[in-house]
Length: 199
Image 1 (cartoon, helix red, strand yellow):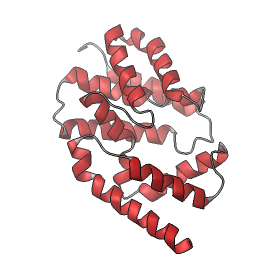
Image 2 (image 1 turned 30 degrees about the vertical axis):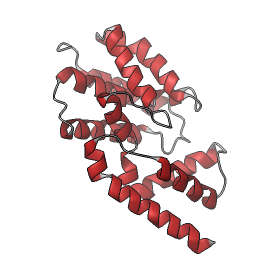
Image 3 (image 1 turned 180 degrees about the vertical axis):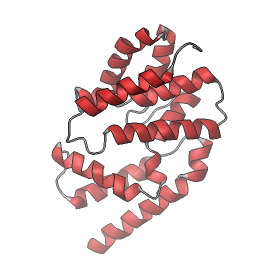
Image 4 (image 1 turned 90 degrees about the horizontal axis):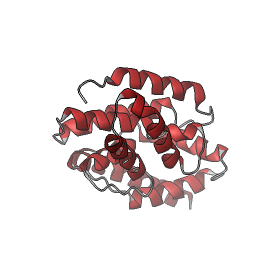
């Protein structure tokens, strides 16, 4: 895959997301995709992924993982794979490589189910913010998005949903377990304390 250039792929997909994603996607927006792209490279390096082909497939999967939101809010991962299967051959990717990308994308579907190291890395990059200091700021963009799509209405519903999600969530990579898990647990404890004060 040495002849495949990543920059044109990134330029194309970022432009597609900027122009075609619905404006009401305040969380699943271009900023989220670029954040996942950044985190997937950081985690891969920390996890000892130095193979250029693996790194390229990870970056491409990060770029395409939420592209399906252009067309649908439900089952967007499958649509993201459809887009990847349609577009990636023109950049020189083989069917086997595209399948690897699609398996990574499908692994991010909640509840996440990665089956190999690369899939684990993308899953952890996708939910990296759960264990970061900007958690509350980013979480508010998801709350706004879910309200728009009538998935919930009130903040108390949202807090209960976040507690349930954080309780069940687990990071997969050693890097994320060591560097994100303890911060995520602090956010979970804060949410539980907030809910108990209201009650």
